[in-house]
Length: 281
Image (cartoon, rainbow, N blue to C red):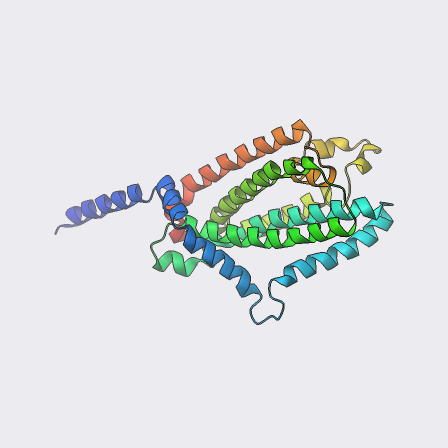
């Protein structure tokens, strides 16, 4: 076979493979293989605590100890009533930890699954969902800390707490989209992981996580919070749980806009790097 003929055959084969492995096609196939990525994600959580006596209970204990220490110290420094400050701090840290893990740990989805990607012909979104299951499971275990805090402090609750359901759904979708975006970016640009970590450190201190928004109002800096999309993302989960009422409409609109922007970002990164991801590993 001549060189031109071989090149034509190779090009035609590549085109057939490319058509078969479209973004939407791979996504649909990955969803259908949910048993694989659920099992892999849960296995990752168990593997973190292999040979440990308490196992995944350490997730609960570590967060509980940190919240107790931070709550007492920062509550005294900021002159906060612990019965309201501890639940606020607990929800904030659980949500922030989930967000952080979606970016930092989820960003390693393809890199940590390099052996699978190169040797097994599964759609690559299986590995995105795998890390999504892992980080979501960790967040769910961490959420038990809030249940304990609320029971111990006798936090009142009403039917309004159900507004947390759409808030948690929006938050979860945002974390899945962030995992997808940073899985591609970190594989293509290894410095993206370090840049994300540095950026999250800055955002942590300018977002009401360990301090309340009211503290900025007296200093005329409330605008810092209003323009921060992460504050609104936290608020659609935090407000229903703490006050048994929905977050302000502006927070839901800002969160929906953020999710739409992240969806667009996930589509663009996939469009650029989906077919070449194996070459970046």
